[in-house]
Image (cartoon, rainbow, N blue to C red):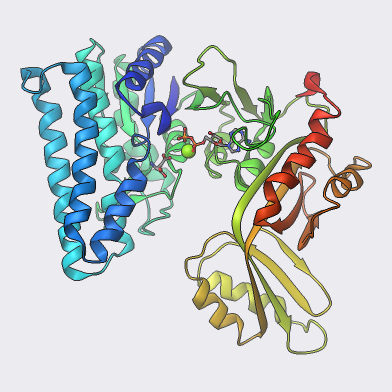
Length: 457
Ligand code: ADP
Ligand code: ASP
Ligand code: MG
């Protein structure tokens, strides 16, 4: 059985939904599909929540009215008539969901407070709508489609906004998916959300629908995961910004996970972990070019080039803590990491000198509190608007000349941090945000364009 996942752009309008249903149908009976909210909807929901919090309820409600209208427009294309009797279930779901959403927004604006719990209730609405309505549209075109509410299956802890799945419980709850699949139905679920042990809706974090797909795949015994998106696979760098970037035929689990972790948005960083557990191959494919083979991600690859791709993440923050003693005293590092542990913020890159330690973080949330705590340990310096660039590959340490070639390409940019060595899989640097694209382009030209090695990728 296959688990397919379609992202926001793949779900952007009625034509895209028809395309998605075609791909599901061609995959065969018993296929499990996870969908994102339609493109722009999650951002609109987050904006509505923030606008409501600031007391502008009318503005927030006009955003939800827009969401209702865009989903109605999709239903119009499938059902023709707003009053068609077979559209009633879809209409009722859409109306009820928007009503519920408006009630949440009223609560947020009345209290003037937006908790992570309320935010999850609001932001998960996009996937609740898209998945349910896609099932109704599937039935309309004659498919045996079944909706399963992810809140019933994807059980998580209660860390709202970044919930962690309870894998054993999800495996139990996935029985319903397996049963429908064995009956040959097309199962459709919303990505991104689940629920905690009290049944309260949680979300997995931005971009989390990819992760939902691999969690469901592991739990329901799937043998393939296909991530359908708006590009033909994982590229040598972000094709939206880097000229001559090209799709990579094969990547190892490690390489793909590392690329995702260091900023290749095409995959949520946690997606690979459930796949590794049972060695499930992951394909990244293009909804708008379904015949392109895309990228196959598996336990190992035959790749010969050491550098496989270049990821980057903009808008990160570098925090430097200078020890108040002359040398890094015993216990200093652990005190620093205790602070990050306490605030549950993960650090991407770390470098140390005799008297200081520098770290990068990509979340702004809780930064003020972290800085307050770090100031008890030493002098703290903050550098905002930085970008992390990572060369990702295989055997980078064993290969001669990689660092020389990389720094040659970066010679005109000031570099704030450099890290290589903790894994054989990446070499990372931090530069100013404004330099990032040009720096990545130079690296990409050096490693992929001026030395083309397409037979190896
Ligand atoms: P979806 O809505 O399908 O989940 P996303 O927008 O989350 O899609 O991810 C797809 C986007 O990821 C692409 O449009 C591309 O701009 C970006 N991206 C960043 N790095 C890479 C990369 N190395 N390969 C492919 N796409 C990448
Ligand atoms: N809709 C959610 C988001 O925009 C989850 C996803 O698309 O993966 O973050
Ligand atoms: Mg995504």
